[in-house]
Amino acid sequence: MTGSVRDPLLQVRDLTHHYGRHLGCRDVSFDLHPGEILGIVGESGSGKTTLLKCVSGQLQPTDGSVSYRTRDLGPVDVYGMSEARRRLLMRTDWGIVYQNARDGLRMKVSAGANVGERLMAIGDRHYGHIRSEAVDWLERVEMDMGRIDDMPGTFSGGMQQRLQIARNLVTKPRLVFMDEPTSGLDVSVQARLLDLIRGLVGSLGIACIVVTHDLGVVRLLSHRLMVMKGGQVVEHGLTDQVLDDPQHPYTQLLVSSILPV
Ligand SMILES: Nc1ncnc2c1ncn2[C@@H]1O[C@H](COP(=O)(O)OP(=O)(O)OP(=O)(O)O)[C@@H](O)[C@H]1O
Ligand SMILES: [Mg+2]
Image (cartoon, rainbow, N blue to C red; front, side):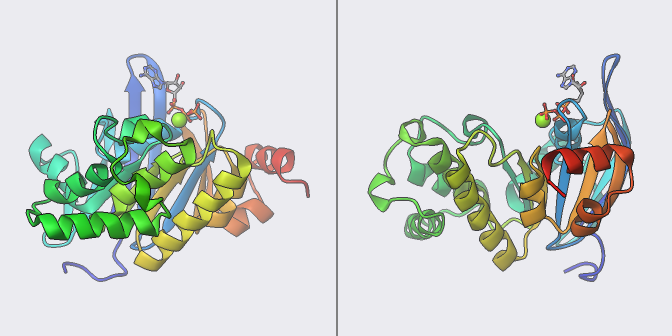
């Protein structure tokens, strides 16, 4: 492996994105280390999804850079490489879990195929191995094995999210991006899903960036926390420190209105 485990996996520098005249996010910089979980919170429209899309190779930023440390080649400029190479990197090294499972699943193929096809996409051609890995991952996310051949559209919201997680983790990514992975689910389903994410991501040592409105989610999942407002980062630090002793007036407001102190 190129680089030491102490080297950042991801280096984001001065990232800015404009949608025409509209600001998406501005001047965002951070490092993410292997196995680290970074939470991003902020009000609606603060730029969280824009930032996540830019960082995860889905949206070319207007300005700034994203550098990712690959297994073999060391740091590479995510937007300096060809589109084909970036797509390959996204398949082999990264996972993306969307808020709306329909954006992250293929609704016209079975649950088993949703997981298995990700292995095929990275070159696995052994049917027996693909099937057994798919079964193993569906079990890990506590899917009912009787439904392995069912289409995702017949599943509940919580089951669809668990399927998305299996589909994303089966390739053993080093980095997973999640945009509001638990919103829209009822509280007990959310809690189970969060436990599952925490257990899997933690045991596999996967680095993760999680966008959420929910301070409870970041408190449970993330090591570090970034607070966004108006497209910019207003506070960034260890999650407990930021939540227990917020420095920026906006973070103080956010914390006091949601977490009784
Ligand atoms: N496709 C787009 N075209 C134009 N403006 C956009 C587009 N997508 C986002 N924006 C604008 O960029 C800003 C940041 O939006 P973004 O979706 O990143 O916010 P967010 O923090 O993810 O919000 P939410 O919590 O509601 O998902 C907003 O002002 C939004 O209106
Ligand atoms: Mg968003």
